[in-house]
Length: 400
Image 1 (tube, rainbow, N blue to C red):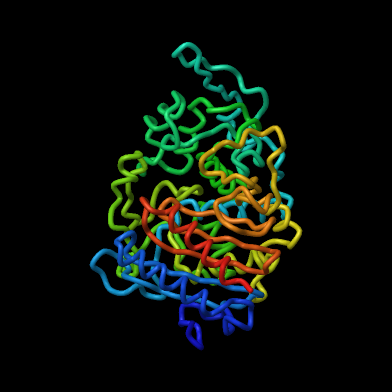
Image 2 (image 1 turned 45 degrees about the vertical axis):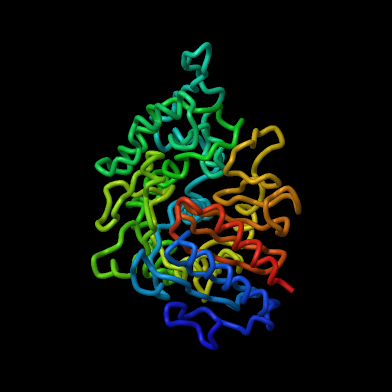
């Protein structure tokens, strides 16, 4: 950890690791482990950050920004995929705090196409469509109990229909994309099952409708500009492309049907569920705002009670939670996964910590009990879960 933060972290404060309860020897092990993984070819490079008590005690860059490329720069731009979801969820909650949106309202109040949803039920090899028992709510979108699904997370008949609908088609506008979602059957009855899904794409469209602007504009006005997140956007302009991190391959995404998007021009479809690119310094500002109760450097984004509400488990006891992306011992809040048990999960951690990650391996978590947040930026679709668990284990081992 350098004595002074790199220029990209301007405005954030630093401390020596031991001053904030981080053990230097353990941080050296963390660095050595990541160097080992880069040398083994599991990713071109990584950027890492650990902060406690509002101060960054560890920031490291290892490897290259892309295969065969230059060393990882301090301001590398990463596709953060589903780490877009917490940002869009925060934007929605700013509208709640203004009295312009209620989370128990039906989605159909804002998008009428969701008024008469059907649920796909497989019966004897056939797909039957039955009426939804109740409307999808805004809260359902934010906690992934809407009944919607992704086409690449399973092989059910509904998921095959979703995959065939080409929902990542960049020729559609955001509004057209969400209308296409509404024409598909649900995977589950609303409120009954935690199913990771296109829910946050729908939420992003509702944010547009209520706020009265394109999603990217709303995020810039409400979050990026106040926090100084100057490199976070739905595309990378030509002037910044030299800084963009790339994986060894997009083959896994292409196999799953996710595809790849060069993201070098303003998109017609701004995906609230996975469309943003960002830097570790930008995302650190966002996470620091959450960790400090909704404000950073005089810019208040949300109230502290709203943050605590979002970071609470919103899954009722009868919600089915046997999904591969929801770790045991965890629930889900409004845009974040939330730890509810000290055990069961694949890593150590504190009850109450909340987090999420992106499909290419980026990840963050916040532990209120430890007054800690940590961020991993990496582009490795094939090894994303391995890097997340490894990083968690080594950060937890550094806490004293």
